Length: 223
Ligand SMILES: [Fe+2]
Ligand SMILES: [Fe+2]
Picture 1 (tube, rainbow, N blue to C red):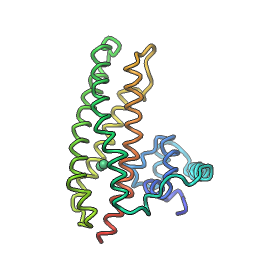
Picture 2: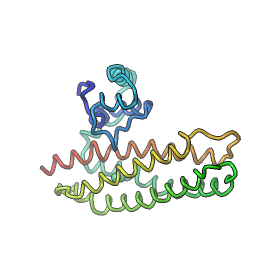
Picture 3: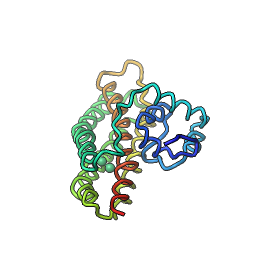
């Protein structure tokens, strides 16, 4: 596809996976909020859409076509990739981050006058509970139904979960001061910030594959 300021962000990400590097660089949401044209998304960030198109084109030209084209892969392969690459690691990573967050909040309360750390703990707790339930429902109900080319009646509910998870990740980033570390932060605090930021990156990739590739492809296959 040719990229123009009118192209939708999610579509660009689906057709050109490496474009997501540029979106990540500028904090442009290409998964949950990927339904808007590039012009609108860049205006929101105070960026010039034409310059952004050029930056995406440079990124694509500089990188060999190594990113797998999930638009063409068989659907069972795409589903398997989502489960192995994103769901399974999340089941390990979320409890690990929860333990670290609790520890930092407990030990460093004196360095947290605004009480952000306990809010990080509770936001992360809610996100963890929601995601564990959401992934179980995807694996047990939605994905088998999609693969059976069922109608995908339930899609709306899953899309709403994604939007909520995106909001929780944005809230975590805000509470964590854009993952800037306070002076002299301990190793657990460092690991927590690094882990939360990595969680955000992989969740964006994960939700992007579901919202912009898997769901539209399954809907098209069922039509
Ligand atoms: Fe998922
Ligand atoms: Fe999902």
